[in-house]
Image (cartoon, rainbow, N blue to C red; front, side, top):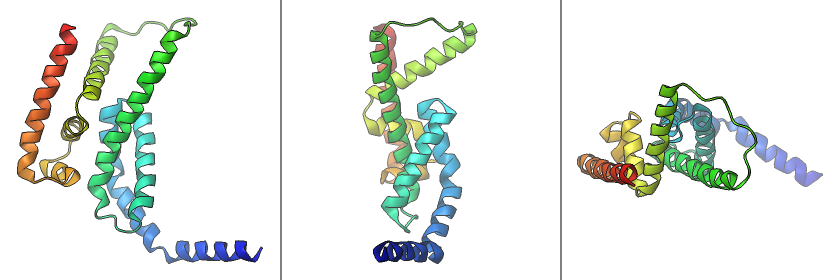
Length: 182
C-alpha cells in the first residue's frame, strides 16, 4: 500500500508540475490539424486520419518527452508512415475477405462517386508500391506542406526537396502507367 501511495504521489507531482503537459498540449494544438490533413490525404478517410493522428501524438508524447521542437517534422512523417501501414493492413484484410463468401451486397453508388473512389484506391495502391520516402514526400507536398516543412520533416536541405519531389512524381507516373496498362 505504501508503494502504491508513493507512485501515486510521484505521478501527481509530475502532473502538477504541468510543464510537460502544457508544452505537449500547445504542441498538439499547433500540429493536430496538419497531421490529420496529411493522414487523410494518405488514408482517404477522415475517421482513419483522426485515429492515425491520435496514434502518432501518443507516440510523440512518449518519444520526445518535453522537447517538442524536434517533434514537429517527425509527427508529419510518422502520420504518413502510420497511414500507409493502415492502408496495408486494410489491403491484407480485404484479401482475406475475398477468400470468404460474401453475404449480400450494398446498393451501387452514383457513377461519379464510384469513379472517384476507384481513382483514389488506384492512387493508394500505386503509392504503396513506391519507396516510402517517395510516397511520403508526395503526400506531404500534396497535403499542403511547404518545401521548408518537408525539408525539416525529412532532414534534408530545402534545395533538395524539389529534386526529390520531381523524382517521386516521375516514379508515381511510371507506376500509374504500369497500373493502367496491366
